[in-house]
Length: 535
Image 1 (cartoon, helix red, strand yellow):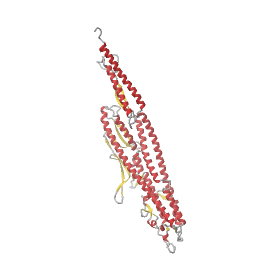
Image 2 (image 1 turned 135 degrees about the vertical axis):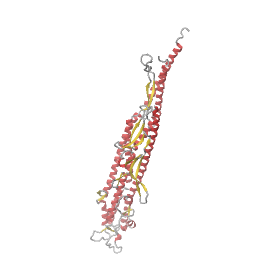
Image 3 (image 1 turned 180 degrees about the vertical axis):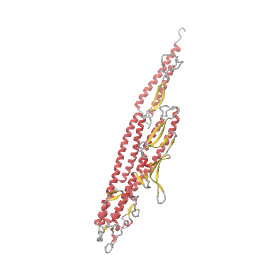
Image 4 (image 1 turned 90 degrees about the vertical axis):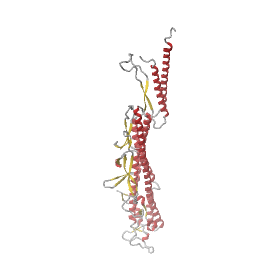
């Protein structure tokens, strides 16, 4: 026989359950503007019916419901959208860092403009043509020297500025790697907390939110794969477990485990640089040559994983040591510096070759104006004060006007000896030859082309790369925002919906309370209104 007070208990359970739902609704409303908060819902379930099955069960028709209870408070989240979001966020991190690096490079190169290298070279060629018209004019000679200085200074400025930004990229890379490790340690701490809460049958929704927020942030830095491990104990079936985070390449191949949920350990990410020893024995960092995840070393050539870290490595530069011991450099800034070095080296070498064949004013007798039988073979440009060697490395930074030219413009070889008749003073044929270096076909690196075409190719390549990076950054942003919008439509707090829920739960709570009033009247009738006839 069921209890007389069963209705009270049923109504009380209803009040408690609806009260929990109202508390959860209030929590959702309070966190409507909290970043990373996922709306929660109360999962209600009917309590066990009376009577339960058994040999001694009372013989009553059917089973009576006994009310409701709260089964769990669960986040409303779609994990598939999380995976999509992190995939797009990962690409955005890579292209955004690459676009920023190229934007800085474009600002330095500053082409086309009145202050770029192309304009400096044009003015230099023009000064030589002016000199050819009047080789004995001291003013024209001074202009050639100053224009030459301008060309050398522009090469040096570009190389120095590019190296400065490259250094900034290295610092940013170091900061990004530290950020990856910081997030990994935070995720590991959250794993530890979750592994202590879930076995007790609770859902640590706030920890889940914090973990997802960190994973979103980490996904912009590196390409990650997240898998979940059950906590064991009395964990609910809908509990999410602890998260293992692995860094993968663009094909999904696992490169290393960053956060190990089972061992609750972090394998920190680090970047190794090629060590460079200068002439004084000082050791400094060169380009990136590898990546380590914990104790696992990964060749930089195998680290094709998108994300900000990878984008910074591609921009800063990395190197590969071949089997023959030679080192090949890759990356946006090393490539641009190498192109400038090659151009400066080829330009200086070709110009010196023509200049050293000419006659300077000092090669003529000051009194008779007769030419010497041999010229002084002066170089116009040097690399840091010494003659050009066989190595173009650093040429853009080191190229400068030779000391002889700096000391006297008379040492500019404007006259030309055709092999038959020694030149007369006033001969400007070599100045013409020097100005023709501009249009001469030269072997620049592995390409046979003119200086102007080579430089236009450098600038054109940079512009194409910048446009591509900007376009893919925009595309990635659109896709990421699109996924985020869909994710927010599922997980974000809607005040309209919460207000509706609040009214719904409030009325359910009131109805349960009314049931208690009803039960009170029934009991009052039983206790005070029955069995009193005849008194």
